[in-house]
Amino acid sequence: MGKYFGTDGFRGEANKNLTFQHAVKIGRFLGWYYGKKQNKKARIVIGKDTRRSSYMFEYALCTGLMAAGADAYIMHVTTTPSVSYIARTDDFDCGIMISASHNPYYDNGIKLINSNGEKMDEETILMVEDYIDGKIEVPIAERDEIGRTVDYVEGRNRYIGYLISMSRYSFKDKKVGLDCANGAAWSIAKSVFDALGAKTYVMNNHPDGYNINKDCGSTHIEHLQKYVVENGLDVGFAYDGDADRCLCVDEKGNVVTGDHILYIYGLYMKERGKLLNNTVVTTVMSNFGLYKALDKVGIGYDKTKVGDKYVYESMVTNGHRIGGEQSGHIIFTKYATTGDGILTSLKMMEVMLAKEKPMSELAAPVKFYPQVLKNVRVKSKPEAQNDPDVQAAVQKAAAELGDNGRILVRESGTEPVIRVMVEADTDEICEKYVDGVIEVIKAKGHLA
Image (cartoon, rainbow, N blue to C red; front, top):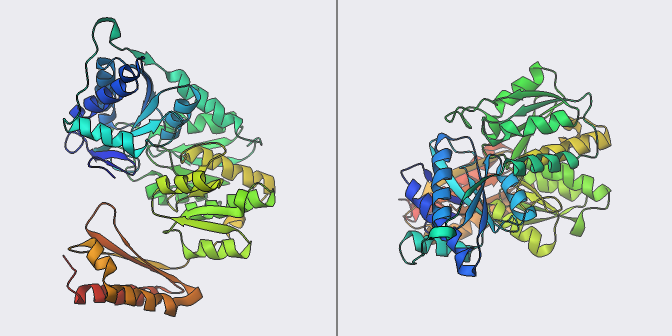
């Protein structure tokens, strides 16, 4: 990770940590880097979510791009996966998404996407950061070289058509609930489900610039749980602010997490001979119950660091076809290069219809183990993590848990924190081993 950009873009509170000046500079660098530097006019596509500040950042990015000689194609309010899709299918030099995903409205972010629809490579991001810090000079365009903006709502419409084409089945007679989080999915998800014949019930689809993710969407799924039960729906799907993640609610009102989705679709692929390498990619934070369920049906798994970036890297490197996170970032590499919440919901509908089973039955084999996670603020993450006595305590806990649980101790990527997590048969067992490791960290003087 760089100085400004983390694993999921440049994030910060609007005009505090992430300012409109940052956006202008990012636009100027990308416009030059993909344009004049290569003796051509760059074509760059931009999307945004529904935050009030997204409009400011959109215009700031366009200003920078045009000043550097690039043409900025504006998709307006749309999802992160739609920008990824259009960047790779419509021959753009790169894409930009303005969103802070599941964060509150006052935060925002700038995500950079390459021409293949993937997250931007580290080398290019480091050059962007060098330009922001004044270490690189970028010439300004003049006369006929100055760029322009192009209204590109057709790109969003083409993405909607792509999603509709993904379904092998009609959704006729299915009652489906959608929680759009007052975010980017509000103008897309219902259109897709309506076109496929579902009786669509929608909540949180009235964005006002301030209510994105506020007590709604995948981070507050309890409201969709109640909504599904009260309206007698067959299934519900909850998205986050930029709709790159999806969680489900079954017909009984139970939450179906990203881990359940990986199991359900991974097994569906295996049964049809489509699960290449017989492997599902997870992060280390997936629940122990997922691995137990996968073991029972003979499916292998790869574990990556936390972050859909690392999941995608493993999938591309090893040729795996499905992977994701418990939070609902699910990647289907045959159809997309990033997590796509709406696509995920369509894939869940496909399994329900193909197997003629309710969501509750499909998810039932994944029995979640109780989990306790505690964060410990420390003076030095590497010193605390690598302390021999801490390591010994972790190894002792792992040995005692055996096949009935697991312990994970890892450094936070953004805070001076060590995360200690245990999954076991009961909360009491989890607490015992988590507290045991924390006591060693404390006794060795690592606490901040």
